[in-house]
Image (cartoon, rainbow, N blue to C red; front, top):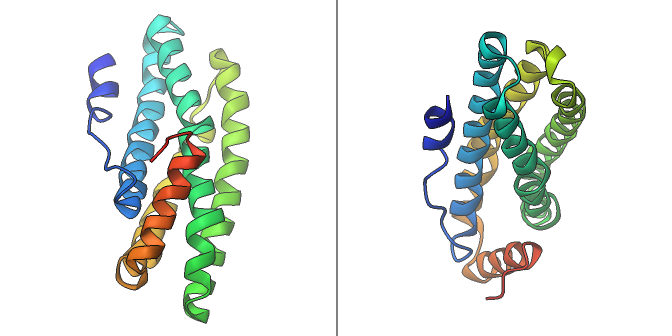
Length: 172
């Protein structure tokens, strides 16, 4: 379980000079952490809540509470407002993505409670959370990030990268 959970996370991320690439790379990490969550269920059923399971839960929880939360802030506070001003169609897509974020946040709250009581961790909160994330990432990359690549100016991309870096305490 250990290698399978870590291998997908070894990829290097683009830097803040490529903020859209960084957002896409974060999506891949989110998906990898969802895979870890899904692998956790049979692991716990087979071996119980051992050190490896506790370590995986810590990694996943830390990731979704920090990096994924920053990612959502990057989008909600910085990218989405720019895109929503471009057209009514993009504003509609932004609204859908925001609603998806709310559903994901609610599912994360439920999943967090289940992870804190790992002995009774069932598949429903994991499946719901991971399904919502997969659906959201597919939607966002198709409807928002694809368009952002074509309509954001160099200056807007630099500002987006700068804001993302500041959010993480990185000096540029």
